[in-house]
Length: 362
Ligand code: SF4
Picture 1 (cartoon, rainbow, N blue to C red):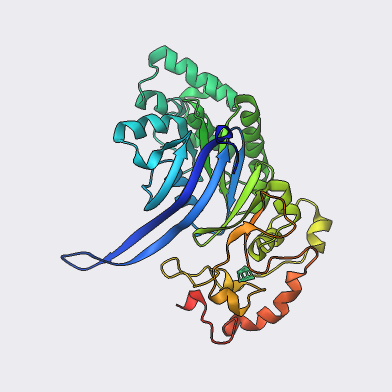
Picture 2 (cartoon, protein in one colour; picture 1 turned 90 degrees about the vertical axis):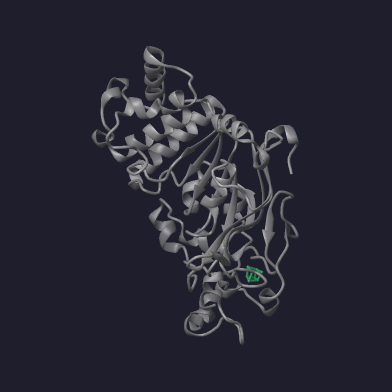
């Protein structure tokens, strides 16, 4: 953990469960979706923490807990030392000025019937900060800051391209000079050529304004260029976290290795040489996660102990002091997991280990 002064957000033992209720007259809780299941992380001031994982791993739920949109089931989220899970309604409103979100879908997150000037000016209106000509001036300054033509103030979202619409979302998020911006898959709905422009814009704004980002993505190649640290999430838990370069150079968790083998690379020669690690089966149900290591039904390195003993999230031998991995048998340098999958190929139709049912079939 870093010095408290450096840390903007500290997530401590956070759980978020969603109850599933059944019954006609009296709804009874019959199960729970374990969306976030005991997460500890921190985001340092002026830095970017990337959170990566497949769809359904809980990363967006965690992001919404950090913004105060979802109450947590258990645990604490400290923002500049204040536990936001205990804030009153008015405290939460003040906190939301400091934390803004950029959403995944630039098409769906903008009201098509409203002019962009009015959309970007929303935060000023909600918090009663500026009105009339003053608001217009501030909105046009924001448009200029994110590379939009301020003269397009009165246009509708449909008159902008996908990348420009995401710039509108960025301008709206910057309006109140937030301390933290949560980017929830901000480029995944965009064309590849436009993704780089939006990522570069976010990086430039961070340098200019000293912003702190929590950056959610499902593709490791996307977070690589914007993140100082990366945390990999699987089925509600963090499986590995390290400084960005360290994680990409020496992944220790088999799941990270598999994600990296699937990440897009610009160099076609490198892409051709790379061996893809194929993960079999879907992510198991978060209603009834597998015992032991949650990744064991899909892991090429799984052994019997993985099916019963949950691995600790600790620094493994030889790793830097800030590289944490939850795995009993971490990947060694040069180890070929793509080759390991020769055996796993046969598991597609039967359990990965004798007598072990996959979470997907539970
Ligand atoms: Fe694979 Fe076992 Fe490590 Fe889990 S603990 S990732 S199943 S080797």
